[in-house]
Image (cartoon, rainbow, N blue to C red):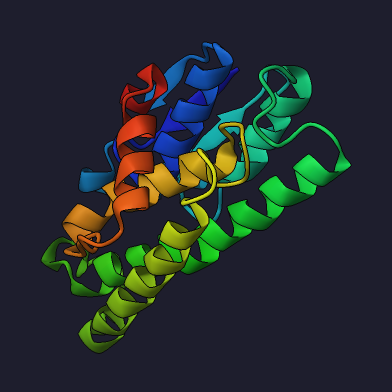
Length: 203
């Protein structure tokens, strides 16, 4: 088994944090995304979308998409549960995972890919107006999230989950996307500081 990894990029990092929370060690194959190595044969032959991460199992089976890879490891190693425990808990984690992905991470990613000069060869066509349009979308969702976090410790309830991991990588990715967490979002800041202090955040 080996994991083709893209360093500090959000989705490869999401899987590494998940694995660290589980205490699972998987051999990494570093891929230099800055040098566009993810578009070369070792990755493209395994994932025609030429995106990372890519998990190759011992029998050659390929899994792509970060949440799918995390779900695979959740089934193999159910504790600690990062996708929820009972029926309601799992549904709540799924709900918040999707909210964090579609309303926060996606908006931050679109802002970065369409505004940052380094993305000019990646995002074709690069549309700066679309990037700018996504900035207030991310901020609007953070205001909603701040209200939710006023009554609980973690995004999806009382336990740390994949939804918190997605939120962590999204907020950390706001810096290169040139988006700031509003000062009034004190609950978001408290939550982000707490989950950033977990050892897994350094994975």
